Length: 151
Image 1 (tube, rainbow, N blue to C red):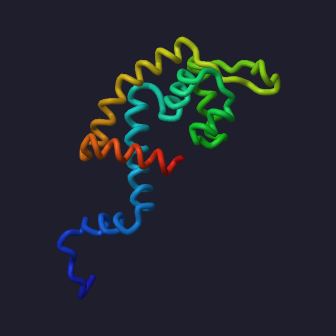
Image 2: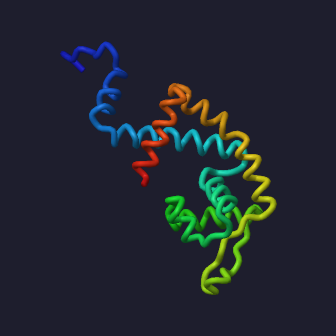
Image 3: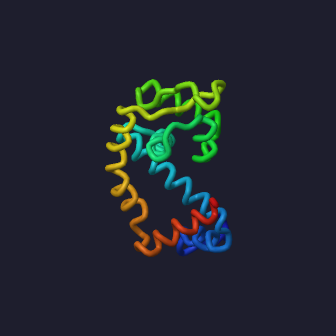
């Protein structure tokens, strides 16, 4: 552009914006981490949503799709696709909920437990690569602050 003096450091704007607008910084960081997580997860056979569902089922036992959706903060329409894929892979099965015959409980299978165990082995390396610029104390602080925000 004529008459415009180029900025000596064209990458200097975003850090200033991030300092002023933590909401924007958090959105950008979240999107970058989500892309990296999805790519890493797919390398090992499970998408992030699938991994989260298997992890929750392993931790708390059978749950309805609605409970999974609510607790994991996954849109209900997306949860249907995740549950379908997991069921087709043999990682979960849907059974009538004994407490509510109108509902279905999603149950982790032995194959699902094995897939989760395999996927979990790669998480520490992914986290180390993704958060390498943060110290251990900063990672703990970030996790604590995010937990607080998500309440």
